[in-house]
Every structure is written in structure tokens, then in C-alpha cells.
Length: 441
Image (cartoon, rainbow, N blue to C red; front, side, top):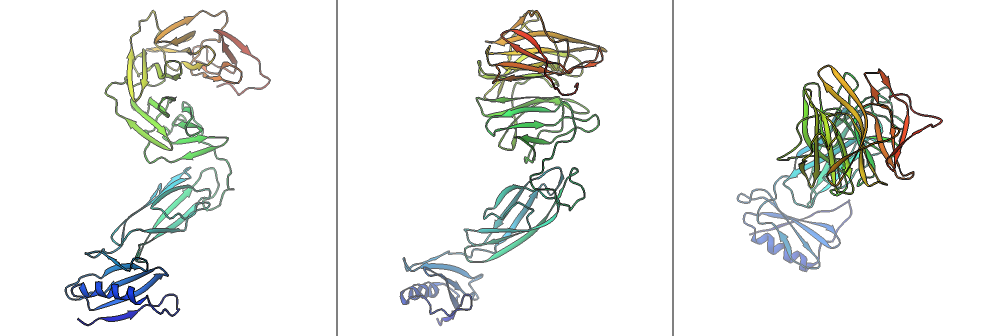
């Protein structure tokens, strides 16, 4: 069989070819390839040489082989590698207002691995990465045509282009870049769910509503708000319960409501990823449940809520992905209520629940009682002084000052929204008188 040697030059520079031993090894491979009528030699680097066996009547697509000066042995596939093809090029989200996190993914078939990736047209400050998938935050709005070029080990290439539209209602006209690092804020809302994500090191906020729209967005706060864009999320909702599970290292969200239904699903969040948890047993659908991490007992504690018909008084724990209902009676637990304030008292080593509202038909009863929970049992505290009856107050433990701080809330019966601040420590309430305070809410 006659062989025709075609010398391939690289970059316009003359090449004297591989060593005679390397050439001999390549010729042996070429001679053994049925149907080959020609082959080409190309020097990929000083240490590697490539051989392309030409296609003959019985050969089909060309075979690609490589040999190194070190081994003097050609490495060839017994079958053609196939055409390098980009099967999927996705930009998520491709268009989304108020979302600055984008994930770009490329899938390929054929060719010869390893593959290299190059991306152009990215929004600032995103930069190209030699990976099949990566995420970055776009800090400038506008329309971007992003192109990926994939190159295989034999220098075959394939390209694909997709469009990303970044827009921001807080940034002015589309196409006008906002200042890099300029803070943006979530849209105005109430009854959003928040928790501090210890593992990721920021506060997580999900959902809420503004009286018209119900939100399903996820935000982080670490000195400034940042919109997140997990690939999957809970459905839009408000008044869902949320707490951080320190034992498992993730945020837990339960229930809430939308415009048509009360919800009873369980989700976990960590590392910009929401995961729906399949639980054989779980609390019934509800909104306004009180939920907190019980450090002493090592589980998340959930109490009460409202399901659209009845105000609930059941107590649940969540640990290792499993819900468990605790046995309580009306005399040993708070009465049914929703939107009670709850936190964990680090000094007393127990959960503290205050207030809430019981809804029965058209009658709403607001509470100002205080309960502690530890060891699987509720205990009502008798306090000489306490905040007025209310629901939807915010309640959190101040570890630097060693007391739980309660602020605001409302009482529809007295048509009042509160602006007062209260400290709870050692089983006692004390009203604070700060020089400045948020507006009533």
C-alpha cells in the first residue's frame, strides 16, 4: 500500500518533522489502518506529534492518533471519534428582572476529550472560565450575546451562541450600566421569611407579598442585599416558617400561603440551592407557624399557625429530614395561635414564644402571654410586666447583650401597630427606650 506523507506546518514556521523513530511508529499505525490512502503529521508540541489517517473507501471518517517522543508509541482509537457537537448551551435565567446571578452551561458529544471552553460576550464583571458550567453575577444591565467555543484534544472546534437579558427596575433605562457594587434592595413586601444561614454566612430571605403580588425570589444579606438565582425554588408564597437547622447545616422552610391555598411542603436551602424534602409525616398545610432552632434539644421546633379555617395548637420537631409530632394538651401548651413571636434564649437555654393571634370566624383574639419550651415541654411564665397583646412582632436573641429583643407587631382589635422595643432575660420583660427606632410596623 502506497503512503503519501503530508507535512503540516504550524504558525507559518517550517518544521523538520518528528524523529525517525517516531515517524516509523506512526507509519506502522497508518499501514495497519484499512482503507487509508494518506496520512498527515502535525507537531502539537515539542513532545507530541499527531497523526491523521485519511479516509479511504472502507475507512469512513478519519482516525486521529497521537504519539509522544517519550513513548514512541501511537495512541489511536479503533473507531472514529465522531463530530464534535454542542448538544446544549443554556443561560439561566435568560431574561429576568432583578436577578443578577446567571449560570452558563455547555454540553458536548463527539470529538476527543479533554475539551477546553472559551466564552465571549459576558457581562461585566463575569470572565471566561475553562469549564463546562459556571455561575457569575452580572452587575450591568443590557442585552448580551454570549458565545462558547469548545475545542477538543485534536483541535476540532464547535461554537454556540445564546442571549442574556439583564434588566433592573432600580437601575434606570435598560442598557445604562449601574455602578459596580451599587446596592440594590428587594421590592417592598411584608410577611417574607428570613433566617441566618450559618454555613453560607449570610441572612436568607424568601418570598413575601406586597398586597398584590406574591414573591418567590431568594435574597442574601451580608452588609448589602444580593439577589440569588437557585435553579429550583419553592413556589411563591408568604407567611412561611423558616429557621436554620444547625445540626444538618441548612435553612428549613415550611408552609406558607399563596392566593389560593395554604401550603404544607418542606424545603431546605444551602449554597444557593433549594431542595424539596419528601417527608412521610409532616405538619398539615398552614401559614403563620412559629419556628426556631432549639439548641438544647438539637432540633427545629414548630408551633401553631392558621390553615384558613382553624387556628392550630400542635407542636412539631424537625431533625435529620424528619418531622415528629409531640404530644401536648391544652393545659400544657399555648392555645391555638398564628403569627406568634419565637426565638431561642441563649442565657436561659430554652425557646421563648410570645403573643400571636387566634382567629375564629370573624373574631380575632390577640395574646400577650409568654411561654418557654425545653425538654419536650411547654411552660407558661407569669411575668409582672410584658408587652401589650400583638401578633407579627419580630423577636431575636442578642448574643452580645444576652437578652431577646422584641420589636413592633400589630393588634387589629385595637387598630394599632407598635413601635416599642422590649428585652427578655431571666424570665423577665423590660421595655427599652432607644433614642431612635423604626417606624411602627
